[in-house]
Image (cartoon, rainbow, N blue to C red; front, side, top):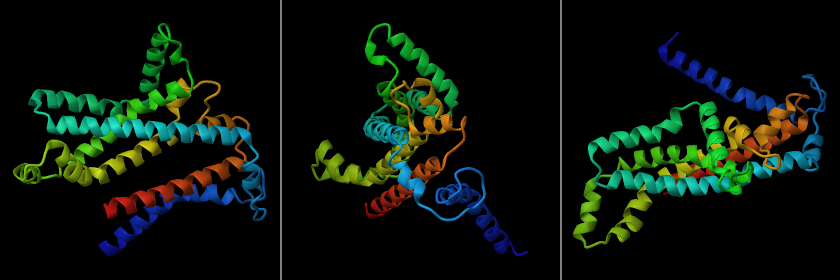
Amino acid sequence: MKPQTARALISYLSLILLYLPSLAVAVFSVNKARFGLNWKGFTLEWYQRLWNNEYILEATLNSLIIAAVTTVIATVIGTALALGLENAPWPKSCHKLFDVIINIPVVVPDIIMAVALVLAFSFLRQFSGAFELGLGTLILGHVTFQISFVTLIVRSRLATLNRETKEAAIDLFASRFYHFRRVTLPLITPGILAGAMLAFTLSLDDFIISFFIHGPESVTLPIYIFASLKRGLTPETNAISTVMLIATVIMAFIAERLTRRT
């Protein structure tokens, strides 16, 4: 077998393994069979029932609210942190320390992060009732690990900018704010969009941290799906998973187009 053919075959197999589970979920979301894996015909009944299932809709709405709010917060803080780390005259020793601190939420297992957040909120509840488990704690918990991802992506984008651009702007008597608004910000916008997209996806997908710090009125979609495993996944679950998958693909396509245009 030629090397080129082997590489193409490996690529096709990798794509099949990557997308086959998602395709299976989409197929069973239009299968008439409520239970089992037998194909009994095409139907959109489960999508119609989905809109009448208040529990799934509430969990989905909670996930979208948390993802949207945390993405905005994490993107703003992460971008500001990346700019501060790259532009401020920090000593080399501080740079190494900051790198370790930023990478900790990325490499630490989610279970450890979840336990740490539970302990932190338990301690803070002694001083304020604002830290009772619910949407508020979920938002704070998600932001804690999203900031690191946004910072890393924006910093990688900042590292590609050449210093000559800034020096040219200064030679033309541009203020720091004007240089940031008209030069730096447009150049790092693709990194900001990529970080925001990743933060949004991580929030929607998170289960372990959400499971530990959610309240009875703040069940997210991953938690609902996990709870459904005990009584068996329903076609409505397949339907909402397919809808979320399609929405994610559309968002990724839009973000890619915006990034390319920028």
